[in-house]
Amino acid sequence: MQVSDADHIDRLISCLFIALPFFVRGASGSKFLNYLNKHIIPVFDKLPEERKLDLLKGLAEISPYTTPQDSRQVLPSVVQLLKKYMPRRKTGEETNFTYVECLLFSFHHLAHKAPNATNSLCGYKIVTGQPSDRLGEDFSENYKDFTERLSSVEDLTRATIKKLTQGMAEHNKAMAAAKSDEAKDKIKTQKQNTTTGLHTCNNILAMTKPLHSKTPAFFGVFNRYFLLIMFRPLMVKRTAAGNGSNNLATKKGRGAGGMQNQLVNRALEGVSYGGRGVGRWRGRGRGWAGRGRGRGYR
Image 1: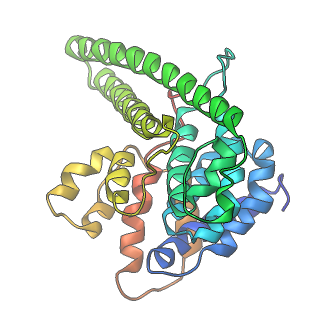
Image 2: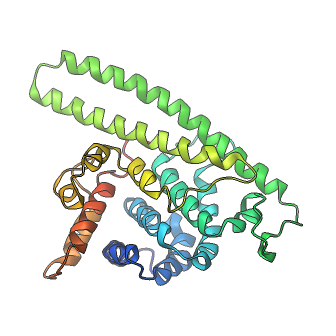
Image 3: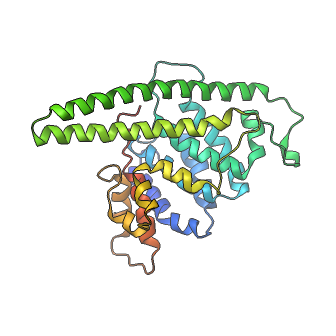
């Protein structure tokens, strides 16, 4: 793994998103997870800034399909990365809420598969009856540290929601006063960014709330559909109306696409597939790509 090799990272992202439909259908994602765990997450800080979010999205997408064994191996790395973006106290630095959202999503699904692994990582007390519960050991400091980080990011998130709500009111006033189409388009884009930021912040609060208990509830397969809708709020209405995944693929998500689609489209050039798998994957991919790269949500 060469951190400076952008093409290497681009190909990894392309392969990961191409492979996602196979994971959905039961194929093992162990090799991808192990590679991310051993070669990507340890050097995450050194990766190109414009690729970090795509990698976190890929990790989030694959996390619901992990095995308990893989989840147990990857969880420590995810928790460490989550702590980096959830400081214990205010540092004065900007918070990348989109990173936090992706990492919390991954954490919930990995922890759902291996809940007792969080006992030593986060100080929880989850009983599965296995020696790996480690209930006889004192991890109270870990619990205090993790919950303080949760509280800190929640405070920042609520403050950001307040600012974004005020900003939305200002956008509405500006839209009413706008005269030219160019001015209206600019304000419309700002409103879309603000709306996406609000959804991101609300998602974070929804995922941090159950984590304060010493025996928390982790979102798992049963309500994964709910969480995916949280990640793609603009698609909720269309999904509820029964439009189907192929229709989702033909409609715009939250923006004009992103590097993820460009990478995968390039990887798929000249490749012909039968069946419906690629159509479904494209629908899911566009939901992610429209997120942008944290514009205005830091």
